[in-house]
Length: 192
Image 1 (cartoon, rainbow, N blue to C red):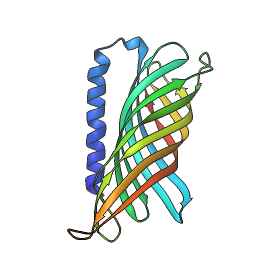
Image 2: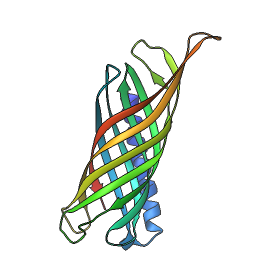
Image 3: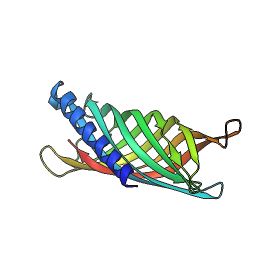
Image 4: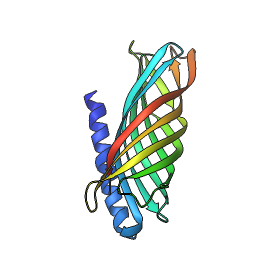
């Protein structure tokens, strides 16, 4: 678990540095950055409860007062069926803010992309080779204006992530498992 946290902190540090470099190359007034953390939990799916945690970074462009688009990367850990899944997603998003004149702004988000799977280990210690797949994340959120440039945001949404694995028992036998992680996500973070 300690190695997972080190990877997460390294990923967030690299995201922030890359974002600062990219942000310096474009017009400041029309771009936004979001750094977030997200706990995720689902109800029982096939008798198993899934839960996890993730973090990520989004760099976006605000095209007008209501419409913004962005690209992002992240790192997520999920536990389902006694297995730890590591997913490194890359996403594209569209954000629509219908009430752009209010101090605290509601928005709707549609995010889609691909999540790469990493090595995972189940509770019995068996090794697996994992792969990722398509992901989709619709959400509703609010941006809380707390200062001149920095803002907090909160989102509530649904996350669908296709993922699978191949378990090798010996050189000739293997078991393939493809499944979809479906969970509710609460994201919170800083926007600037």
